[in-house]
Structures are given as C-alpha cells and as structure tokens.
Image (cartoon, rainbow, N blue to C red; front, side, top):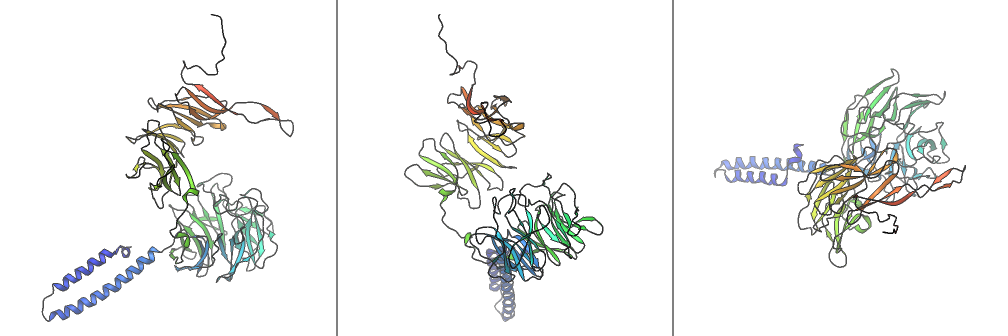
Length: 591
C-alpha cells in the first residue's frame, strides 16, 4: 500500500531536495564524481517513480461490482454493467464479450470442454438462454418461452430462464418459470446447444444445481430466493441442499437445518455450497464418504455470492470483487480486474430531472416549489426566475423535501454520511446545509415541520415516530409500533399535539394523540375498527380520520356469502369536552 502514497507534490519535493544537494556541492574536481552519482540516483528515482505511477493508475482503474462469475482453466467470465467480460485468472485487463445496449447478459457458464459459454440474455426483449463461443461471437438463442410475471434482475424473485450448469458438452440446464404462476417457483429444464425443444427434469421444483461426475445424481436447491434481500432468513423458504438419484428417484437432504444452504457444487466426492448458518454467507463442504460438513471461509463483513465451480477452483463475489478459492489447498486470491472500455453510461450528461421527481413542497407564499429529483434538492419559481440546485451532491441521495412554514428552510433526508440523516438548508442556497441528526441506524421517512417551524416529525424503519427540536437537536420518541412502520401523522395547529396512526396486531390500526409537553400518548379510536389518516381542523378543535366501520353487506357471486365493500368513510372526533359537535341533532323546544 505504500506504493499508493506517492503524490505529485511529494515527487516535486524530492526533486527540489536533490537540486539543493547539487547546489551545495563544492566547486572542485570532485564534483564530477558527485555529478555521476546524483545522475545515476536521479535516473533510478525516475524509474521507480514511473513504476509507482503505473501501479497507482492501475489501482485507480480497478473495477468493482463484478457479478456472476464463471471459471474454466485460466479463464474467468463475469458480468459488469450488464455485459459479459473475460479476464485471466491471475487478473489484468478484461476483454468485453457482449455488448447488448438494451438488455443485460449474466449467469455465464462454460461448457466442460471450455469451447462454449451459455448465458442468460435479453437480446430480443424477453429473457432467454443464449450461446456464444468462449472466444466471443454472435449469440445464438436457444430458448423461446413466455414470461408469466415480472422479469428483471432487480426483482426479488430474480430473472427468468437462468442458466444453471452444463450436463455435458451438449446439454445446458436452466431454471425457468414458464410453467409457474408463482414467481418464486420454477422448474429445471435441459436444452441442447443446437436449440430445439427443452426437456423438463424429473423434479417438481428446482434452483441452483450441479451434477455428479458420472451424471447419475444431482445436488440441487428446491427454492430460488438469492435475489431476496432479507438476511438471516429462517422461514419456510429457507433452502437446503438435496441430492437426487436419477436411477432410484430418491432424494436426500444433506444439510437439513433452518438456515440458507445454497449453490451446491459437486466435485469428486465432495459437495461445496454456501450457508449463512454463522450469519454471514460462507463456503462449506459436505464430504459424501464421511457425511461431515466443514466450513472453509470466514468472511464476516460481506456475504459470498454467486459462486461457480471450475476444475481446480471455485470463483465467487465478495464485496463487489472476485475471489478464487483453490480446491487443493484452500488458498484464496483476489482477482484484480481492470476495465478499459469507454463505458458511455458513466459519462457526464445533461438529464431532465423533471421526469424523476420523488417529492415536492410548496413555499408558504406560493412563489417557489421545492423538488427532490435524481438525488438533489431543487427550488423552482412559480412563474419567472431561476432554478436552484441546493445540494448538488453527486453520489448522494437527497430526498423527501419539506418547506418550513416560516419559509426560511427546506428540510430533506440525505445519505451523504452513509446513513439516512435529516438536514435543513436555507431556501436561498447561500448557506451550507445543517445536519440535525447523526449516528442513524435505520431508514427515515417523510419529515414534516411543526406549524411554528421549531420541530420536525418523522418515522423510521424500526417503527418509531420521532420528534426533533431544531434548536437543541434533541430527538424524542413520540410513539412506537412493533407491528409495522408508522406512516400517518400530523401536527396540531398550535404545534403541541401529534396525531398518528399506530399499526396494531391483526391488521387493525388505531389513532393516538401525543402531547409534546407531557410526553404522554393516548388513544383516540378503539380497537374494533381500523382507523387511519388523522388530520386536524384549522382551530385544533376537531380531528378528522378515515375508518372502516360501515357494514353494508351484499351477496357475493359464489355460495351466497356476505361480502363487505366500501367500508371506509370519513369521521371526526371533538377534542374538548365543551366543543359542540356540528352534527349534533337540533330540536326546538318551548322555553
């Protein structure tokens, strides 16, 4: 790492120091000797600094977010920015293999002989299985299927028609949802590299899989949830590694625990797989002869993701980089990858932020509007004037703008520290933003100002409703729900009270009032009927809300059962004992 510490100014200082030595030399014949020595040293220094500079530039260009690797011999293929690249196992400059601008290519798998690469691609719009020579070439489409649900890499159920492995040099195994209406379920299919009709494997459901060396057995997962973002999941969809015998039709569970055990890779008499039984996803191995399981890696920060088996190694992702696990001795080597393409999507360009607005707030006088768009905060004049970008924060997501009632500040949430924090900024943009919260541990939602502009109210992912005093930066928890996040809340006109909807058990929401002076919370509605969306009248005498308490049954279309539709209506409560109800029945009496 010391090689990276050389800086331009440091190099200048070194040359200045050498010049100082030169000028300080005595004016006699010995100067020739000193000159030769200094000349040699300066040449050596120049060469060394050039090497340092080359190393520094190389380190600058090292790529990250390298996905879905595959290995064969000394070749590694991976996905970067939606395209396939090839790089040597020892690292270096990667060579681009595919370049579809309208879709992505991923899940590359080498044929056993290394001559072909099967992968999942979107050249024709739909997500299908394609084939190219391992040196690159025109992609050949192998499958033609219907997509019954959402189909994108960003979806929690992952894309359709995912290439899993090769059965031999001719047959490719892929997972498809073409017969499943549940997007988390799919079957394994076999297609020839020349194309033709696919054949379903004799398994009711399947995910990642690997054949034994003789092809008579298969280690596989039944579930496919690697694109689900929940960590440490232990529910009914937590996967195990199963071994299926094609001759006897028997299936054996070799992991059998409540953790995720995924990506089986069969090599000789061992089955390698990933497991999060120690919280972080690491590499394990199951010995078929002894029925013993051993942990092979010890990552604690990032999970191992999307491993792939070669003849002598397993390659995988970790923290956006690629690593090579050598089967013979268990050594792990990081593969340094350089990408030297133009990567046009990374160039600076002008974007129309008006197409990507996520929040907005009108100034109190109606002369300007604040917008959160493309990660920045803007203010726009109602009729004439200039548009201001208040944050101009490249690489930061600024959102959830709100204008203070006194018109002075705009509040927003930003992740510039790495976590969600709340900031306020002078609406004219002439002063730096003020960070009001710190040490956040969860997502924040929808800050709103108190009418007196002295407090901010927001909720978070942990189920808390929080009140922030602007002057002191003190945060008070006004409410909490263990069932779900609190998303409905509003201030009373005098800035003292907060009305909010608290999610209760059994899907019934209840409205509460929080007193910012006493710190007490009290329910407004009962536990019998669902209530939400509390809103105050301008004088703070009435609280309006919606509630599902209208029972007007109709007969359903089947079995003469009662169906209840349109149960929600608008209701209100009076907040003081002496406040009359505007709907109170009136009756003239003789006095």
